[in-house]
Length: 363
Image (cartoon, rainbow, N blue to C red; front, side):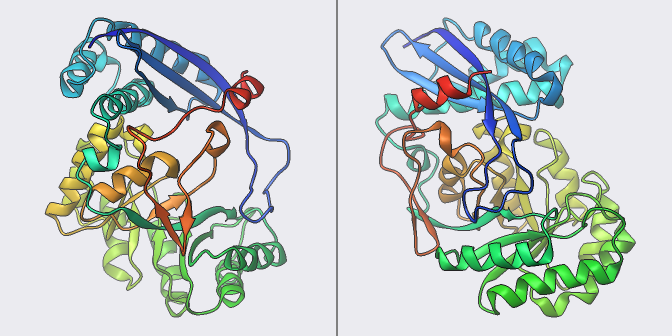
């Protein structure tokens, strides 16, 4: 089997908030690049990437150029194909647009491999379990008022979510009291039995994280996420050592090597990996193994329809972020039952683009 060609498309995906119907802002779109890798036996692998922002056209061109280099290659030899792409373009990386583009190719290759072997990706990668916990994300954002956040949180509970994530580092110039009030508001809305995480998105200094984090420890957060600058490994380690609440981080890191620095510095208690920034399925699983060697759990960032396979495949997978950014692109996505995502039996990613949606979202 050989790769014969590819097709890329730029999409503008609406930033809807379907989980609690509480969008932070109306009418916003997220630029996304999708790729289809095609083979001489009729199989097609799909992948996607984003974070290009105003440079999404450049990102699409990078995906095009890397995909062209795979023509004639055997898609079953994923490591060989990816290494050949690194040899031609790694001087433009290893982070940034190179990694973002590579992730789409890598994911599409694994989709082809799963289809060729008639196995779902989660089984191909290890098959540790066939369902994984998931948490609602994106509905309790910092731009909401306290009343809106409380209402959205109650809606998530009514929908059966047992895990969910909120945010601190509120807009404007909030005082520590403002921050503390928000997270207590959400906790009071959902009750004591809901697993509640909180994301800071790198907006605090280490001393702020220690101060505010220590004052909300009685809230019982499952983790505080990205409390300060992602590559301030020493600052993160200070926070992790100072707080009883577990610290999660890693989604902003590119490739594999920074995770070694983060893990060896004991910067986090929970390793979070973004598949797009990491460079695809292949490096994501390697980072998961690295985390396992240090007795650390691993969690996903966005794209639950794909990341559910990876978290389910490895023994240290903890939970899947249910961020519905891209769900509208597919005909069907994994179902949620009793707070768990159920792994699909279809081969590869088990996903098929909804062509009507693709047409509607094409930029």
